[in-house]
Image (cartoon, rainbow, N blue to C red; front, side, top):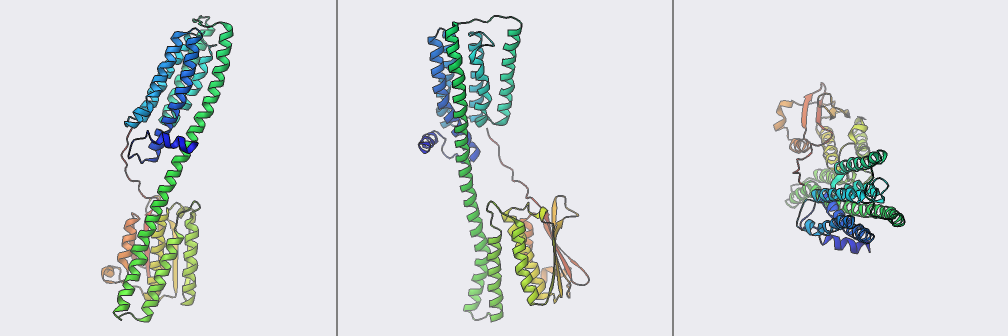
Length: 401
């Protein structure tokens, strides 16, 4: 049943609507309009039939406005303004009905509790706050008038008023429950759509990583192997590099329990084994509570950079020891410094452009992180520092109503 209602409601949504929040608001607007048409048409008919044509007319005018909501949404009218205008119309109708049914004791005054609840799914927190204040002001007005002894018009006798009070309170409770259910259903559907979109983006990211990383490495190995210009040692080294890259991609995946700490620990275990095999001492320190703010994509860039720097030190530095640290940057506010230092023969940092140590890839990773890659002589050895902000700068998005 719920799926059928969603299918019907989605038929009124504008074509090409992809923003999840906009979809949720539009769907909630259509659901609430259907609920409102039923509720107001019944109450308007009852009030008119029981002796208050002014009240009935005011309520049925709300019904007409609510009935137009799917049509307006379909034509891409702003859901925000549609919701607020209709709530304003309901606020005025409540004022009319209460003045025609005895003032503060009127059962219609209970409708004030519905206004913020109904506008929140389509107008957001700001609209709900505004109409909460407006509803409170209306209730306070009638309460003050009651204390002052002012007598409002009473279109109903005592028995009819009791019936209206019971039916009104029951209607408010039923409407509140229905609004909450509709809002929750729309929210859950929006969350599901967002999850699907995130999974699609994650799949695309993994495919790009495999294509640009492992794929290009394997292609290079295949080309050199076919030309018989690839020594066995280089083939083994290349295959190990591909395997490491695949492991990094897996480690950096972003499930609900994504943890950069775990990915970093997995990398450390693999590196430790290779350092032990090469009789290289590995010292590793990290401030993981800072690094855990990294997204999966940024984590992968950092992990690859650490792996490449350590591999370069193992292959070229002739070092007895490698120090790795992940710490808060002492230069960049809200930043991280990832440092890899060897204690080997070192090299002249001014000759980096001719060093042939895979620095192009490392600089590309630094650029994607929005940071910088620095090299300096450490006497003995070389210190490489990758410095970047913990969180990427948000992209500017156009706002719309």
